[in-house]
Amino acid sequence: MVLLLSLGESSAEMTRPVSLSAGSFFAAGLACERHDLIGQGQIATIMTDLDKYLSARNKRWLKDGFDKGLKTSKVFIPERGWIDSTADESECYRVQSVLDEYRSILGGN
Image (cartoon, rainbow, N blue to C red; front, side, top):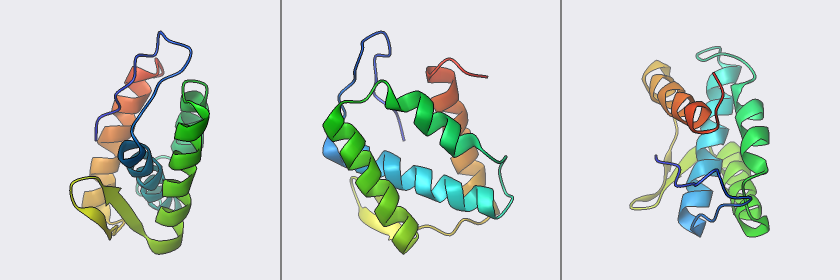
């Protein structure tokens, strides 16, 4: 997943599918945190840091994806729709890689 943002702007615009995907991905990351397969607290920090760059509708769509991802244990892939999220070691390794990309884009460590 790639975050398509220009963080020099006061807000960024993502499509609805990208916003849903990001939200569902963060839900999958939270499941990985709960299973102690990635470091704790990353999801909350990244979502808080990202929030200031998103438009109101992107925030709503991201929350929709997050809520559905938490409820159904699925992630939204724009090209494939909603697919099962396993929160196993392999998936959580990929989740951590994407979190590292988000953190880099957002200017964190």
